[in-house]
Length: 184
Ligand SMILES: [Zn+2]
Ligand SMILES: [Zn+2]
Image (cartoon, rainbow, N blue to C red):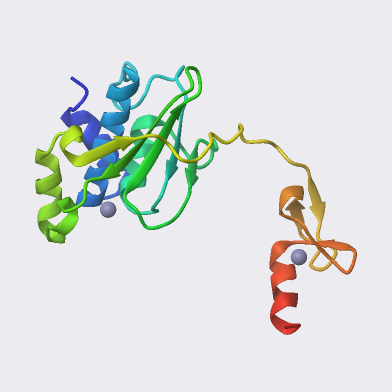
């Protein structure tokens, strides 16, 4: 049984508090584990180390932390990505098999009050909470390492992929948008 108190508590520890939003991400993670037939590691607090999932979240709310904690999809590793559009939807991809699923919180469920939502979502099964459908976004390539260059305006080292061209010079995106603001 993957749904256990230890698993939930480690999410709460990671996130900093227990809340309904975290519970949404917790149940989405359980759904994903079940959908792909994946096991937790020996500590029962996160996915086995030799598995790698990618998550694309359509919101940046509390639930994202449960996914980072349980499924080891993290911003730093590049396997947790945002496609922000304010929806309680999460797409999961399993690289090794090419399987993927997009989970969307069912309409009508979230109309409970904030205080009651933790208890409310806690009692629902993942299948009761989410509609599962096909993913809409192609699995992005693995995170690449880019080399850095000095911005010709502020001099700060900037990843190549983030550089912009201004008057034939490479500048960082901050310097580029500052220029934009004064020259429109
Ligand atoms: Zn929260
Ligand atoms: Zn700059």
